[in-house]
Amino acid sequence: MSQDYSAYEDALSSAEIIGTETLPHSWREAPRAWGNELHKLAPYVGGFPPALANYLLQQYTDPEMTVLDPFSGGGTTALEASLLDRDVLASDVFSYACTLTGAKTHPLTEDEFDAALKRVKRDADNVNPDMLPPVDEDAAIFFHEDTLQELRQYRAVLKEDTSRDGRFLKAVICGILHGPSELFLSIQTRDTFSGSANYVKDYKEKHDLEEVYKPVDEKVRDKFNRLVGAQYPSGSTRVEQADATSLPFEDDTADFVLTSPPYMHMLDYSWNNWLRLWWLDEDRSAEQDSLNQTSKVELFRSFMTDVIAELDRVLKSDARAIIVIGDVRKHRQGGAKVVYPARMIAAEASEFGFEVERVIEDDYNVDKRYYTQLNNLRWDEEEEDDGQELIDRILVLRKGDPGPQVEVTPEWSD
Image (tube, rainbow, N blue to C red):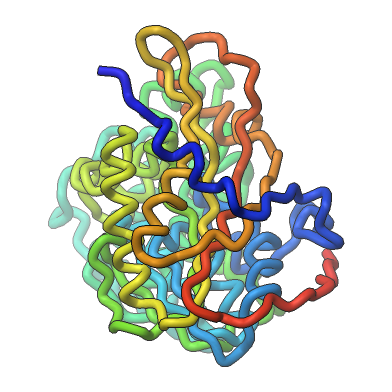
Protein backbone atom coordinates (compact mmCIF):
# COMPACT_ATOMS: atom_id res chain seq x y z
CA MET A 1 0.00 0.00 0.00
CA SER A 2 1.43 3.40 -0.94
CA GLN A 3 1.97 5.96 1.79
CA ASP A 4 0.64 9.51 1.54
CA TYR A 5 3.20 12.03 2.80
CA SER A 6 1.45 15.16 1.51
CA ALA A 7 -0.08 15.97 4.91
CA TYR A 8 3.35 16.88 6.23
CA GLU A 9 4.58 19.01 3.32
CA ASP A 10 3.43 22.33 4.82
CA ALA A 11 4.65 21.62 8.34
CA LEU A 12 7.73 23.82 7.93
CA SER A 13 6.27 26.39 5.56
CA SER A 14 6.26 29.23 8.11
CA ALA A 15 9.59 28.39 9.76
CA GLU A 16 12.88 30.19 9.28
CA ILE A 17 15.02 27.74 7.31
CA ILE A 18 18.74 28.39 7.10
CA GLY A 19 21.86 26.47 6.15
CA THR A 20 24.94 26.13 8.30
CA GLU A 21 26.85 28.28 5.81
CA THR A 22 24.69 31.31 6.74
CA LEU A 23 25.44 31.09 10.46
CA PRO A 24 28.08 33.58 11.68
CA HIS A 25 29.71 30.68 13.54
CA SER A 26 28.90 26.99 13.80
CA TRP A 27 30.16 23.59 14.92
CA ARG A 28 31.54 23.12 11.41
CA GLU A 29 34.46 25.36 12.45
CA ALA A 30 35.58 22.93 15.15
CA PRO A 31 38.58 20.67 14.49
CA ARG A 32 37.60 17.19 13.35
CA ALA A 33 38.53 15.48 16.62
CA TRP A 34 37.25 18.30 18.87
CA GLY A 35 35.82 17.24 22.20
CA ASN A 36 36.53 16.02 25.69
CA GLU A 37 38.44 12.72 25.87
CA LEU A 38 35.46 11.17 27.68
CA HIS A 39 33.54 11.29 24.39
CA LYS A 40 35.99 8.64 23.15
CA LEU A 41 35.41 6.30 26.07
CA ALA A 42 33.73 3.76 23.78
CA PRO A 43 32.38 3.88 20.21
CA TYR A 44 28.72 4.54 19.45
CA VAL A 45 27.57 4.49 15.85
CA GLY A 46 25.52 7.33 14.39
CA GLY A 47 25.73 10.07 16.99
CA PHE A 48 26.13 13.75 16.15
CA PRO A 49 29.48 15.41 16.95
CA PRO A 50 30.20 16.92 20.39
CA ALA A 51 30.80 20.31 18.77
CA LEU A 52 27.20 20.42 17.54
CA ALA A 53 25.87 19.71 21.03
CA ASN A 54 28.21 22.28 22.55
CA TYR A 55 27.18 24.95 20.04
CA LEU A 56 23.44 24.45 20.51
CA LEU A 57 23.68 24.23 24.29
CA GLN A 58 25.61 27.50 24.45
CA GLN A 59 23.18 29.20 22.06
CA TYR A 60 20.00 28.16 23.85
CA THR A 61 20.75 27.34 27.51
CA ASP A 62 22.48 28.70 30.58
CA PRO A 63 23.93 26.97 33.67
CA GLU A 64 20.80 27.00 35.83
CA MET A 65 18.83 25.04 33.21
CA THR A 66 18.04 21.32 33.11
CA VAL A 67 18.64 19.56 29.78
CA LEU A 68 16.69 16.47 28.71
CA ASP A 69 17.82 13.85 26.18
CA PRO A 70 15.41 10.88 25.84
CA PHE A 71 17.61 9.20 23.18
CA SER A 72 20.93 9.58 24.96
CA GLY A 73 22.85 7.12 22.75
CA GLY A 74 26.56 7.60 23.30
CA GLY A 75 25.92 10.35 25.85
CA THR A 76 27.05 13.28 23.70
CA THR A 77 24.35 15.72 24.80
CA ALA A 78 24.49 14.59 28.42
CA LEU A 79 28.26 14.95 28.68
CA GLU A 80 28.46 18.31 26.90
CA ALA A 81 25.61 19.70 29.00
CA SER A 82 27.24 18.51 32.21
CA LEU A 83 30.62 19.90 31.16
CA LEU A 84 28.84 23.24 30.69
CA ASP A 85 27.43 22.95 34.23
CA ARG A 86 23.86 22.20 33.18
CA ASP A 87 21.85 19.57 35.04
CA VAL A 88 20.85 16.63 32.87
CA LEU A 89 18.03 14.10 32.57
CA ALA A 90 19.09 11.36 30.15
CA SER A 91 17.50 8.09 29.12
CA ASP A 92 17.62 5.46 26.41
CA VAL A 93 15.92 2.12 25.87
CA PHE A 94 19.24 0.54 24.77
CA SER A 95 21.28 -0.89 27.64
CA TYR A 96 24.66 -0.12 26.08
CA ALA A 97 23.63 3.52 25.60
CA CYS A 98 22.70 3.82 29.27
CA THR A 99 25.96 2.20 30.37
CA LEU A 100 27.97 4.58 28.22
CA THR A 101 26.01 7.73 29.11
CA GLY A 102 26.21 6.94 32.80
CA ALA A 103 29.94 6.27 32.69
CA LYS A 104 30.74 9.44 30.76
CA THR A 105 28.74 11.67 33.08
CA HIS A 106 29.92 9.96 36.29
CA PRO A 107 33.58 9.10 35.60
CA LEU A 108 35.91 7.79 38.28
CA THR A 109 38.82 9.78 39.59
CA GLU A 110 42.26 8.20 39.33
CA ASP A 111 42.19 7.01 42.96
CA GLU A 112 38.64 5.67 42.58
CA PHE A 113 39.61 3.87 39.39
CA ASP A 114 42.69 2.27 40.97
CA ALA A 115 40.66 0.98 43.90
CA ALA A 116 37.80 -0.28 41.71
CA LEU A 117 40.06 -2.09 39.26
CA LYS A 118 42.06 -3.68 42.08
CA ARG A 119 38.87 -4.97 43.72
CA VAL A 120 37.31 -6.29 40.51
CA LYS A 121 40.55 -7.96 39.37
CA ARG A 122 40.87 -9.69 42.73
CA ASP A 123 37.30 -10.95 42.56
CA ALA A 124 37.67 -11.99 38.91
CA ASP A 125 40.84 -13.95 39.66
CA ASN A 126 38.87 -15.89 42.27
CA VAL A 127 36.10 -16.90 39.84
CA ASN A 128 36.29 -20.60 38.99
CA PRO A 129 36.26 -20.83 35.16
CA ASP A 130 34.56 -24.23 35.39
CA MET A 131 31.54 -22.55 36.97
CA LEU A 132 31.07 -20.06 34.12
CA PRO A 133 28.46 -20.44 31.35
CA PRO A 134 29.64 -22.14 28.14
CA VAL A 135 31.96 -20.18 25.88
CA ASP A 136 30.17 -18.12 23.22
CA GLU A 137 31.76 -19.44 20.03
CA ASP A 138 31.06 -16.25 18.08
CA ALA A 139 32.72 -14.09 20.73
CA ALA A 140 35.63 -16.52 20.99
CA ILE A 141 36.71 -15.75 17.41
CA PHE A 142 37.88 -12.30 18.50
CA PHE A 143 40.19 -13.19 21.39
CA HIS A 144 43.12 -15.25 22.59
CA GLU A 145 41.73 -18.02 24.80
CA ASP A 146 43.36 -16.61 27.95
CA THR A 147 42.05 -13.11 27.26
CA LEU A 148 38.59 -14.56 26.67
CA GLN A 149 38.72 -16.46 29.96
CA GLU A 150 39.67 -13.29 31.82
CA LEU A 151 36.84 -11.39 30.14
CA ARG A 152 34.37 -14.07 31.19
CA GLN A 153 35.63 -13.88 34.77
CA TYR A 154 35.38 -10.08 34.79
CA ARG A 155 31.90 -10.33 33.32
CA ALA A 156 30.82 -12.71 36.08
CA VAL A 157 31.92 -10.15 38.67
CA LEU A 158 30.53 -7.05 36.96
CA LYS A 159 27.31 -8.20 35.29
CA GLU A 160 25.09 -7.49 38.32
CA ASP A 161 27.12 -4.49 39.48
CA THR A 162 25.02 -1.35 39.00
CA SER A 163 27.29 0.85 41.10
CA ARG A 164 29.13 3.84 39.68
CA ASP A 165 32.39 1.86 39.82
CA GLY A 166 30.90 -1.14 38.05
CA ARG A 167 29.21 0.89 35.33
CA PHE A 168 32.39 2.81 34.58
CA LEU A 169 34.55 -0.32 34.33
CA LYS A 170 31.97 -2.01 32.10
CA ALA A 171 31.98 1.01 29.79
CA VAL A 172 35.78 1.15 29.66
CA ILE A 173 35.91 -2.51 28.64
CA CYS A 174 33.22 -1.84 26.01
CA GLY A 175 35.65 0.71 24.61
CA ILE A 176 38.54 -1.75 24.29
CA LEU A 177 36.77 -4.97 23.33
CA HIS A 178 37.68 -4.95 19.66
CA GLY A 179 39.22 -2.61 17.14
CA PRO A 180 42.00 -1.92 14.64
CA SER A 181 45.01 -1.42 16.92
CA GLU A 182 46.99 -2.84 19.83
CA LEU A 183 44.90 -0.74 22.20
CA PHE A 184 42.13 -3.34 21.98
CA LEU A 185 41.73 -6.77 23.58
CA SER A 186 40.85 -8.51 20.33
CA ILE A 187 42.74 -9.39 17.21
CA GLN A 188 43.16 -6.33 14.99
CA THR A 189 39.71 -6.03 13.45
CA ARG A 190 38.93 -3.66 10.60
CA ASP A 191 37.01 -1.25 12.82
CA THR A 192 35.08 -0.94 16.07
CA PHE A 193 31.73 -2.14 14.66
CA SER A 194 30.85 -5.66 15.73
CA GLY A 195 31.05 -7.54 12.43
CA SER A 196 29.48 -10.97 12.18
CA ALA A 197 31.46 -13.96 13.42
CA ASN A 198 31.78 -15.32 9.87
CA TYR A 199 33.07 -11.98 8.60
CA VAL A 200 35.68 -11.78 11.36
CA LYS A 201 36.70 -15.39 10.78
CA ASP A 202 37.24 -14.72 7.06
CA TYR A 203 39.06 -11.47 7.88
CA LYS A 204 41.42 -13.33 10.23
CA GLU A 205 42.22 -15.92 7.59
CA LYS A 206 42.65 -13.39 4.79
CA HIS A 207 45.09 -11.28 6.81
CA ASP A 208 46.73 -14.21 8.61
CA LEU A 209 45.93 -12.77 12.04
CA GLU A 210 46.87 -14.62 15.20
CA GLU A 211 45.36 -14.16 18.63
CA VAL A 212 47.74 -12.62 21.15
CA TYR A 213 47.19 -12.75 24.89
CA LYS A 214 46.35 -9.32 26.28
CA PRO A 215 45.76 -9.00 30.04
CA VAL A 216 42.42 -7.31 30.67
CA ASP A 217 43.59 -5.21 33.61
CA GLU A 218 46.55 -3.79 31.65
CA LYS A 219 44.39 -2.74 28.70
CA VAL A 220 41.76 -1.25 31.02
CA ARG A 221 44.44 0.81 32.74
CA ASP A 222 45.91 1.91 29.39
CA LYS A 223 42.47 3.12 28.32
CA PHE A 224 41.90 5.01 31.55
CA ASN A 225 45.30 6.67 31.31
CA ARG A 226 44.13 8.35 28.11
CA LEU A 227 41.48 10.15 30.19
CA VAL A 228 43.92 11.56 32.72
CA GLY A 229 43.86 15.34 32.51
CA ALA A 230 40.44 15.54 30.87
CA GLN A 231 37.93 18.00 32.31
CA TYR A 232 35.30 16.13 34.30
CA PRO A 233 31.60 17.06 34.13
CA SER A 234 30.21 19.25 36.91
CA GLY A 235 26.46 19.23 36.32
CA SER A 236 24.12 16.85 38.13
CA THR A 237 23.10 14.02 35.78
CA ARG A 238 20.40 11.38 36.14
CA VAL A 239 20.54 8.47 33.68
CA GLU A 240 17.73 5.92 33.30
CA GLN A 241 17.00 3.02 30.96
CA ALA A 242 13.56 3.81 29.59
CA ASP A 243 11.45 4.00 26.46
CA ALA A 244 11.17 7.59 25.23
CA THR A 245 7.38 7.18 25.13
CA SER A 246 7.30 6.58 28.89
CA LEU A 247 9.95 8.67 30.58
CA PRO A 248 10.71 8.20 34.30
CA PHE A 249 11.05 11.94 34.89
CA GLU A 250 8.66 14.23 36.75
CA ASP A 251 6.36 16.77 35.09
CA ASP A 252 7.69 20.26 34.36
CA THR A 253 11.31 19.52 35.29
CA ALA A 254 13.28 20.23 32.09
CA ASP A 255 14.01 23.55 30.41
CA PHE A 256 15.46 22.27 27.16
CA VAL A 257 15.64 19.17 24.99
CA LEU A 258 18.50 18.27 22.67
CA THR A 259 18.16 14.86 21.10
CA SER A 260 18.31 12.77 17.94
CA PRO A 261 15.74 9.99 17.54
CA PRO A 262 16.37 6.79 15.55
CA TYR A 263 16.48 7.35 11.79
CA MET A 264 13.62 4.99 10.98
CA HIS A 265 15.78 1.90 11.61
CA MET A 266 18.50 3.05 9.24
CA LEU A 267 21.00 1.85 11.84
CA ASP A 268 20.75 -1.44 13.70
CA TYR A 269 22.30 -0.51 17.03
CA SER A 270 22.04 -4.03 18.44
CA TRP A 271 23.81 -5.52 15.40
CA ASN A 272 26.58 -2.91 15.41
CA ASN A 273 27.19 -3.61 19.09
CA TRP A 274 26.43 -7.31 19.48
CA LEU A 275 29.86 -8.08 20.98
CA ARG A 276 29.41 -5.30 23.55
CA LEU A 277 25.98 -6.69 24.38
CA TRP A 278 27.64 -10.08 24.91
CA TRP A 279 30.14 -8.45 27.27
CA LEU A 280 27.31 -6.67 29.15
CA ASP A 281 25.44 -9.99 29.34
CA GLU A 282 22.42 -8.50 27.59
CA ASP A 283 19.99 -10.37 25.34
CA ARG A 284 20.61 -9.07 21.83
CA SER A 285 17.25 -10.24 20.46
CA ALA A 286 15.38 -8.49 23.27
CA GLU A 287 17.41 -5.33 22.71
CA GLN A 288 16.67 -5.49 18.98
CA ASP A 289 12.94 -5.83 19.61
CA SER A 290 12.99 -2.72 21.79
CA LEU A 291 14.68 -0.76 18.99
CA ASN A 292 12.31 -1.79 16.19
CA GLN A 293 9.57 0.74 16.87
CA THR A 294 10.61 3.12 14.07
CA SER A 295 11.24 0.83 11.10
CA LYS A 296 8.27 2.01 9.01
CA VAL A 297 6.84 5.46 8.38
CA GLU A 298 3.57 4.98 10.22
CA LEU A 299 5.32 3.29 13.12
CA PHE A 300 7.73 6.21 13.27
CA ARG A 301 4.92 8.78 13.17
CA SER A 302 2.99 7.05 15.95
CA PHE A 303 6.15 6.58 17.99
CA MET A 304 7.19 10.23 17.67
CA THR A 305 3.68 11.42 18.59
CA ASP A 306 4.00 9.55 21.87
CA VAL A 307 7.55 10.87 22.36
CA ILE A 308 6.45 14.47 21.82
CA ALA A 309 3.63 13.98 24.32
CA GLU A 310 6.26 12.96 26.88
CA LEU A 311 8.50 15.89 26.00
CA ASP A 312 5.54 18.21 26.49
CA ARG A 313 4.87 16.65 29.90
CA VAL A 314 8.45 16.83 31.19
CA LEU A 315 9.26 20.26 29.75
CA LYS A 316 8.34 23.41 31.62
CA SER A 317 5.74 25.75 30.12
CA ASP A 318 8.40 28.02 28.56
CA ALA A 319 10.96 25.79 26.88
CA ARG A 320 12.67 24.68 23.69
CA ALA A 321 13.18 21.27 22.14
CA ILE A 322 15.82 20.74 19.46
CA ILE A 323 15.54 17.54 17.46
CA VAL A 324 18.27 16.51 15.01
CA ILE A 325 16.91 14.20 12.33
CA GLY A 326 18.03 13.29 8.83
CA ASP A 327 16.12 12.68 5.62
CA VAL A 328 15.51 9.04 4.70
CA ARG A 329 15.25 7.45 1.28
CA LYS A 330 12.88 4.46 1.33
CA HIS A 331 12.91 2.07 -1.61
CA ARG A 332 9.66 0.36 -2.42
CA GLN A 333 7.83 -1.02 -5.40
CA GLY A 334 7.47 1.72 -7.99
CA GLY A 335 10.67 3.55 -7.04
CA ALA A 336 12.35 5.44 -4.26
CA LYS A 337 10.66 7.92 -1.99
CA VAL A 338 12.46 10.46 0.17
CA VAL A 339 10.83 10.78 3.57
CA TYR A 340 11.30 13.93 5.64
CA PRO A 341 10.94 12.98 9.31
CA ALA A 342 11.54 16.62 10.32
CA ARG A 343 8.28 17.62 8.62
CA MET A 344 6.47 14.77 10.30
CA ILE A 345 7.82 15.70 13.73
CA ALA A 346 6.99 19.38 13.22
CA ALA A 347 3.41 18.53 12.26
CA GLU A 348 2.90 16.26 15.25
CA ALA A 349 4.59 18.75 17.62
CA SER A 350 2.18 21.49 16.54
CA GLU A 351 -0.66 19.39 17.96
CA PHE A 352 0.92 19.81 21.39
CA GLY A 353 1.38 23.56 21.09
CA PHE A 354 4.98 23.61 19.87
CA GLU A 355 5.97 26.15 17.23
CA VAL A 356 8.79 25.68 14.77
CA GLU A 357 11.16 28.52 15.55
CA ARG A 358 13.92 27.61 13.11
CA VAL A 359 15.29 24.79 10.98
CA ILE A 360 19.03 24.56 10.41
CA GLU A 361 19.91 22.44 7.40
CA ASP A 362 23.22 20.63 7.60
CA ASP A 363 24.20 19.33 4.18
CA TYR A 364 26.72 16.87 5.57
CA ASN A 365 25.37 14.04 3.41
CA VAL A 366 24.52 11.13 5.69
CA ASP A 367 24.97 8.64 2.84
CA LYS A 368 28.68 9.45 2.74
CA ARG A 369 29.33 8.99 6.43
CA TYR A 370 31.84 6.27 7.17
CA TYR A 371 29.54 4.15 9.32
CA THR A 372 26.81 4.22 6.67
CA GLN A 373 29.06 3.12 3.82
CA LEU A 374 30.73 0.45 5.91
CA ASN A 375 27.53 -1.17 7.10
CA ASN A 376 25.46 -0.56 3.95
CA LEU A 377 22.62 0.54 6.19
CA ARG A 378 21.16 3.50 4.36
CA TRP A 379 19.45 1.59 1.57
CA ASP A 380 16.53 -0.78 1.93
CA GLU A 381 17.55 -2.41 -1.35
CA GLU A 382 20.51 -2.20 -3.69
CA GLU A 383 19.04 0.33 -6.09
CA GLU A 384 20.24 3.53 -7.70
CA ASP A 385 19.29 6.63 -5.75
CA ASP A 386 17.30 9.41 -7.37
CA GLY A 387 20.11 11.95 -7.25
CA GLN A 388 18.45 13.87 -4.44
CA GLU A 389 20.77 14.83 -1.60
CA LEU A 390 19.81 13.80 1.90
CA ILE A 391 20.64 16.19 4.72
CA ASP A 392 20.35 16.51 8.47
CA ARG A 393 17.76 18.97 9.76
CA ILE A 394 18.04 20.60 13.16
CA LEU A 395 14.48 21.32 14.19
CA VAL A 396 14.18 24.07 16.84
CA LEU A 397 10.78 23.84 18.54
CA ARG A 398 9.43 26.32 21.06
CA LYS A 399 6.59 26.27 23.58
CA GLY A 400 5.55 29.36 25.51
CA ASP A 401 8.19 32.09 25.82
CA PRO A 402 11.62 30.54 26.53
CA GLY A 403 13.43 33.80 25.88
CA PRO A 404 15.86 34.72 23.11
CA GLN A 405 18.77 32.62 22.00
CA VAL A 406 22.23 33.87 22.89
CA GLU A 407 24.67 34.58 20.08
CA VAL A 408 27.82 32.92 21.37
CA THR A 409 31.10 32.77 19.48
CA PRO A 410 32.53 29.33 20.21
CA GLU A 411 36.24 29.04 20.91
CA TRP A 412 37.25 25.78 19.29
CA SER A 413 40.63 24.33 20.06
CA ASP A 414 42.17 20.87 19.70
